[in-house]
Image 1 (cartoon, rainbow over the protein chains, first blue to last red):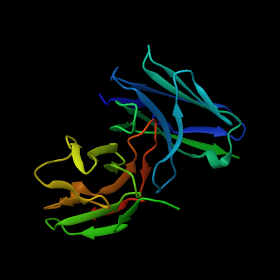
Image 2: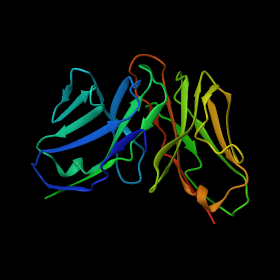
Image 3: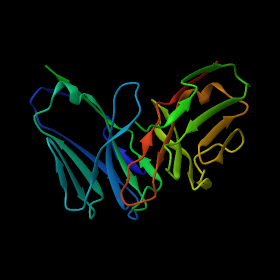
Image 4: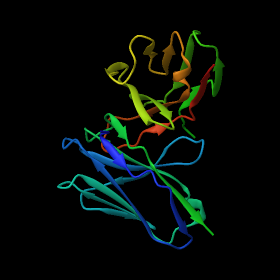
Length: 111
Length: 114
């Protein structure tokens, strides 16, 4: 079993839809959490960090549930440009420690 | 615009040959990661350095892979001998050991072993 698990999808949604991804992690010592975005044939880039109280950045909302060991990403009013693979990432230290990536969830936003 | 630089971007080699991939981390970053990405396995951590010292290389096949940081501006990943199953995209990333700082990825080396 992988340490960070995600539903690979693909999630096919129409423009304007709201879509949510979940991610579970198995190591209770995990301290830092992130969502990265990876476009086709490109490198991963940080989308947002995930804080215990939850956080929002425009149309994107990230939540953390430590008790259940899962992280979520909500995208509202999805755009064509949101089409990408979203990678859930955990770290065992609160400063750039060993970053463990999930397999990624692929999102396709259709017109 | 600071970025992680990886060379070569693409490499095609024959089975059994040595492959060396290079990475120049962002100036001032003290943490360097090597990842391998395949369709089947996703992003796997191969090695991880802090202040040039290897902290974790448990994800790396020791018999054929080696990772080093000869100085703060250069990280290398070597495969000797290469095998077809090593075909993948190899990413280097760098970051700062400070707070909740992100890791910045290079554009990757796409390796094909035939």
